[in-house]
Length: 398
Ligand SMILES: [Zn+2]
Ligand SMILES: [Zn+2]
Image 1 (tube, helix red, strand yellow):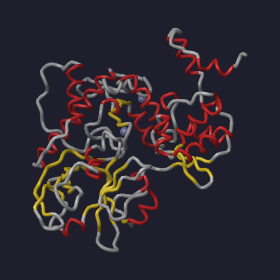
Image 2 (cartoon, protein in one colour):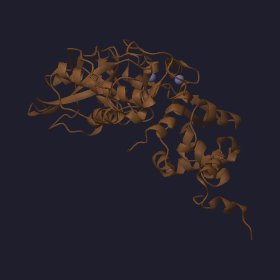
Image 3 (cartoon, protein in one colour):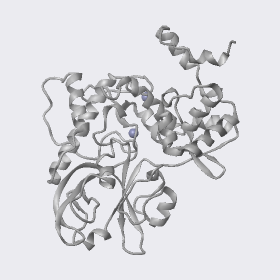
Image 4 (cartoon, protein in one colour):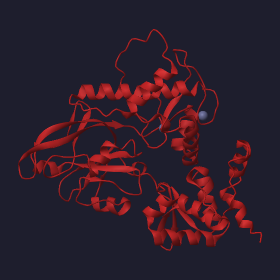
């Protein structure tokens, strides 16, 4: 018997690389044409549960577009990839295609499913405006009483500052441009678990920190903007039973979420190095900067070191791009006064472009591509495309 479906199991590894590439490129979402295959994927999602479904097929939660069916929401990219497998035998891997408007959304629209865009909370909420926790919970999901929320479907950590701390004799505060935010844990020493871990690891997890100030009972919370955890310090503070214990205070830096060229922070004056450092030196410095998690107490030192680490990442990715935009491959549009090509660092996993992010997640792009990503109709897709390119340029785990 000659079963044609067996053909798909053929090991391609002996084929020339180029041919392998062509075969894998021929696996495209355009060939997902069966509505029943999508329904079968949805059914499997329901029966195995979201987490195990995503883990089994190697997908991350869809943060920008969700598939809506029968009043329920599904991760659009994962469903598309698995549905492809239901129709053609082998599911598409997450790395084989990009999510977003031009691919997944189009495909589902063609098959008669509705996909809705879920805006990043920082694009939806207005800084300085007052919101109520119950409304935030309805929109994003969160733990009503907790001081730190980790909404599951959004790349954010919500931090609430204010009232709760006062009961224990302390409060969060601005000191010299750094916001000192006390971690969570009512009794005993605070540890890097739960919300505290979410703050510490927010960059590695691709999450933006959003700060809300509690205005008091019944008065809601005021949205203060997006922040970065620069570092932290350990202090002695009373716990709920008024016993002394070790608390974690996070040093948060306010950051902008618009595409912009230069950081609002002033670079500390440095004399220019006499020789241009090699790309290897820059790379080492950038990786060190991205991985460093210092314990710091002095706000001036917090700012200085955070800025220095951001610069190390920026300098390396711009040197890596070698004068060409990493999104569109066009040469940098002009040279800076010092003669180097003008490109801007863009953080592909988060809204904020400042801070020492991992070089695999930061692209050096021309101002045009940068605006396009942040403000363009196809910005999301353009960002995903850049993410995929960065995987080749700067493989993770290197
Ligand atoms: Zn470009
Ligand atoms: Zn950007």
